[in-house]
Image (tube, rainbow, N blue to C red; front, side, top):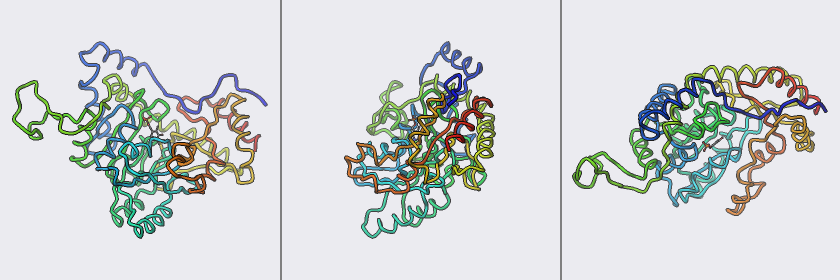
Length: 389
Ligand SMILES: *Cc1c(COP(=O)(O)O)cnc(C)c1O
C-alpha cells in the first residue's frame, strides 16, 4: 500500500497572522484575564447565533457543567444523552451527582433517535423516572431533530441542553445552531480540533436571563458584585459576596481574543469544510459506504466526516483503520459508546443496552476533514479507502 509523504491528521486548527497579532496585542495589554475581550467574544457569539446571552468558559466541559447546575440538576435527577458522543456530554450530569442514562441513536445519522427518545419517555413515565434534562449532541455538526425533541420536552416536561460542541456555524431550519430556539441552553466547544478555536474554551448560550445569571456565578466561585443579590448592604468599593458554591471556569483574555479573531473567519472555514465534504460525498456515492449526512433542514459545519462500512464489512473495520493509519492517514472513530467505558460499566451499564450505538461503533470511520486539507491529500484518502472496500 502507498503511503502519503506526510501524516494527515483527522482534524487541525487554522491559525493565520491576524490570530497571532490579536493574541500578541492582548499580551501587551493591561488584562490577561477578566478584561474586555471575554465580553467581546460573548457579544460576537450572541450576534452570530441570535441567542440573547452568552457565558464563555474555559472549556465546553465546564460550560456543560454550569448549564446542568443552572437548570438545577441534583442527585435527585436523571439526565439523558446520546451514547455516541464524547464523555463530557454525560460526565457533566455526574458532576452534579445526577443519574445518567442514554437514548439510542439512528445508525444512519449517528444522532439521538427521536423515536427511541419517545419510547423511553413513555416507559420512564410509567416508572416515575422521567429525565430532568436531555442533552442531544449534534454529531459532526449535523443538527439533531430539535423540533421533535422540543415537542417531547413540552409533553414530558424536561429541559434541553444542546451539546453543539461540533456545530458552531451550523444551521437548523435556517437559523444558526446556538439560537436556543428549541432548547434552554446550547454549548459550543473551541478546542483546536473543533470548527474554530480559542485553544481551550467553550460557551453556554441561552435566551433566559436567569439561567445566564446563574451560569455566570457558577463560572466564578458563586461570587456576586450585584448589591441587589447581597444579604446586606455593601461594606465599600472592595466588597463582594459569595452567595453559592461555584468554580473557577473563567476564560482568559488570550483565549477570548483568539476566539473573536477566529469567528471572523467562521463562514469561510465552514464553507471550505462543506466543499471538501462534497468531494467525499461525490466520491463515495457509488460505493457501499453509508455517509453520515445532515438532515434536509440543516446546514452542517462539518466538524467530522463519518462513513459507515456495510454490515458485511464490519469484521474488517479495525484492519481498514489500521491500514489507513499505516498509509499516513489518521482515520479515527468518533465515538466509543460512552456506556461501554469501564467507568460507565461500573455504574451498571451493559454493552448491549444500546444496540444501534454498538452497531455504529463496529462500522464507523472518521476520515480527515479540515479547512487546509489539500486536494492531493483528500484524493489519496479517497483512493486508499476505496481500495480497502
Ligand atoms: C469536544 C467535545 C466536548 C468537550 O469540549 P471541551 O471544550 O474539550 O471541554 C463535549 N462534547 C462533545 C460532543 C465534544 O466533541
